[in-house]
Image 1 (cartoon, rainbow, N blue to C red):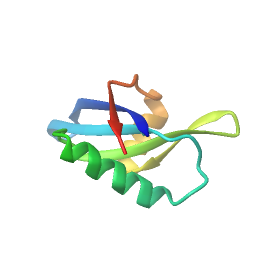
Image 2 (image 1 turned 90 degrees about the horizontal axis):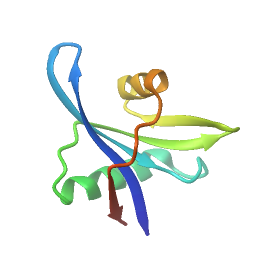
Image 3 (image 1 turned 120 degrees about the vertical axis):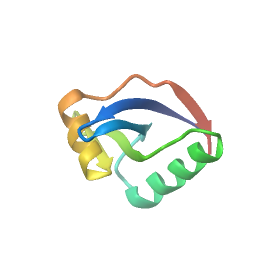
Length: 89
């Protein structure tokens, strides 16, 4: 199964950069922590540098995020990024 993801690099509040991934999830019906862990490992094994990660899914008609708390807060303010990659899982 192919999963869409956005792999981005943004400047952190402490200087430097943070590489992060946001994965497209179809629903919030399962174990989000396990799914996020598996997807992050798969993306890293394909060569992507990921410091933080999150899932993005629709819930009650709006986009919802699950993952690293500060990344979720950032995404909640900025919105879901455009998909940049696909991985097979």
